[in-house]
Image 1 (tube, rainbow, N blue to C red):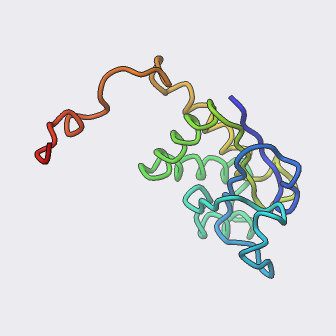
Image 2 (cartoon, one colour):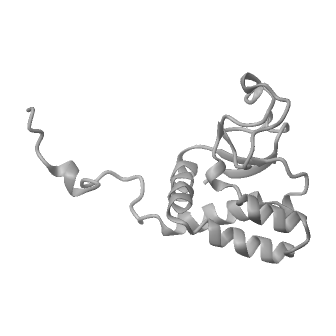
Length: 146
């Protein structure tokens, strides 16, 4: 598995798919410069902490440990959990980099997100990546047009 983290604007030297995981896109940067400027190849704000959580953390209403705890809880929601599983499966096949604005990675949600992706890797089926069987019953239904 190839999974790393970076700060926005410093992703040019990173290999693989650069995924922006901040709630907002960079201000003052034109959309066409997101990739060339080292920001991200794709933006996934579903993996960012909620606005309320960020407000509480920046305002001192919660400690770093509590921020990380609450962020982990937010990432257990079905939509975020599914995207995290997708990142784990993708990171098996290609390098992925998780980016955000924060200068200090140790206080940034992207460090926790990296841990969550690694944990999701452990939850993938053992034969992940091997062919075998159909994914769901509707896929097994014959095509009425055939």
